[in-house]
Length: 492
Image (cartoon, rainbow, N blue to C red; front, side, top):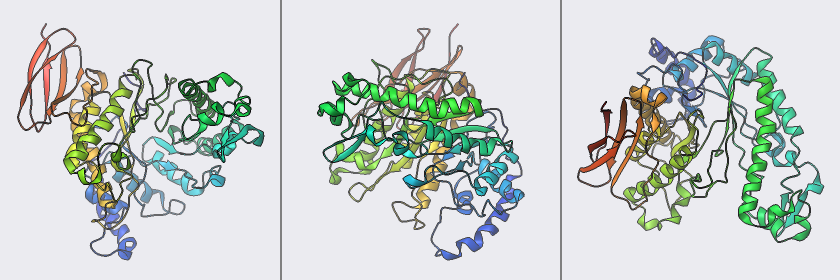
């Protein structure tokens, strides 16, 4: 069984009574918007995202990269007011977390402010787990390579000598951040980061050492620059060690029960590598105990040009491509992830859309893709979205984000009706469709006595399919264009 968060109980009863007071709280804030506009705030969140109707006890709740604007200032609001809002969001399956985001490189070494600490206190008082989002490594890349002698240049660009890092500045700052909460008796259940920069093999880093002998000589292991594949594995291992020193060792002493995960940091095998959403393969990696696998399973609009021209971008064609990209990313990760390692996916139906490719995944396609994720071993969702335009006709509208969150919530609720399978079942299928594929897509979770199957066909007519269970039992099923769940009882 996977290592899920510490037990907590979500009590939705009576939460709806909070809605009236929250609507009143939002009235003055929304007076700056036109009547037909929809701002990304708590009031409109509660209008567009429905309450959960299933028990969420011991389940990882949905987290949001961009949280709705709160109707209060945490530094000055009353504790009861904050707890009411936190519980209203939690009744929708959404866990408010404390986000300590410093936008500029020279500010990435900040410490929690009064607003962060009071919001954390309110989350704990609401009986919910405290999760922190601190996306950047403190002091960023410059802090990991503070010695200017450990930098090289190539084609007028600077690169760190990847294996001569120093984590002491980052460790010290992260310890101060965590201690600010733990010293107040606020236990941290999860810490999430988004370090996407060095050490990496991409964007010229490999060539900076491979093509320039004096740069290569600065490496502790100069042979690592002999080939791209060797360098890719080398930088992946260095990255894991940096994360180990900064996050895992720090949490082990200050918050030993906390989960930790970093964007796109996943298990990957030698013969069965994990893919990212762009189709790049990860180096071989086995995550350490307590690390959450976090694949980037979202529809990356600006990369549709790898598959089609703008004039070909119908909704059906876009859905086919995004379905391929997202299910490939998740499935290739899940097939390498040990059964006791949680998978919390960065998820979203539209990211980085452009004028040439304005479409994201349609809502039906996004919902169906998530059904297959849950039946392939997913444990939680971190919804990634940044669009908050109050104009509902905008391609980057707050309304679309509310719809995305509601779709994520609704499919979590739907699949939780099969909770025993989600928590104890063994995934049966990790194959993913190519964009042009028009056949059957199926996923399943198998218990000792039963199996749960989700199957759908991309064609216009129903299609028969035979699915074989681990005991050799063959089952004749029918995949329909609308999709269906089937529970199979194993023969004794």
